[in-house]
Image 1 (cartoon, rainbow, N blue to C red):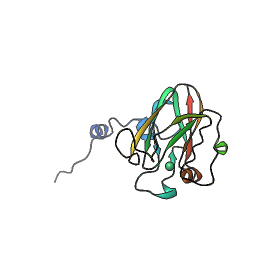
Image 2: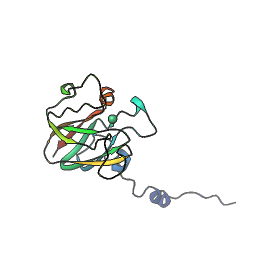
Image 3: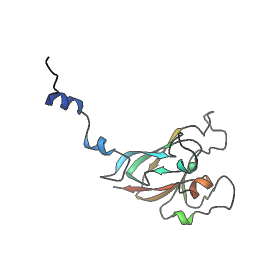
Image 4: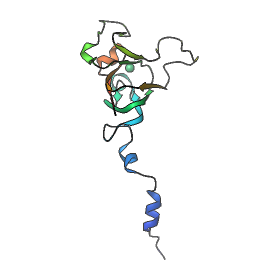
Length: 161
Ligand SMILES: [Cu+2]
């Protein structure tokens, strides 16, 4: 009985299109030069709950000047991005309540998961919110939901050339 043996050409076909960037991921880490369009997980996914969900991944988001960060929002979260210079310890966190709402130095305010959205859909569902970064700098991005931020749900967008 003749046995089937994969040839070099078959192996080449199987791995065709698998580039170094797709192995490393174009946008899931901070390696290499900044990209013009980056995808970020804002919330760890609807198969998680509580503190396990309260993450922005990756923690350092590297994007090219003039580029866009596409935040994939998993459920009940709200994106707040601040102008460069604002640090996590500068956030004025109220002692109670659902939201932080620190508007000082705000660069971008995402859709609120509390109110009726303009689209007619629930803002608590998964969605993408894209934010453009025209100028260089280090921008703090947090989840405006108080307990989420206190669980460490924040990251930095590093805009570079
Ligand atoms: Cu959140």
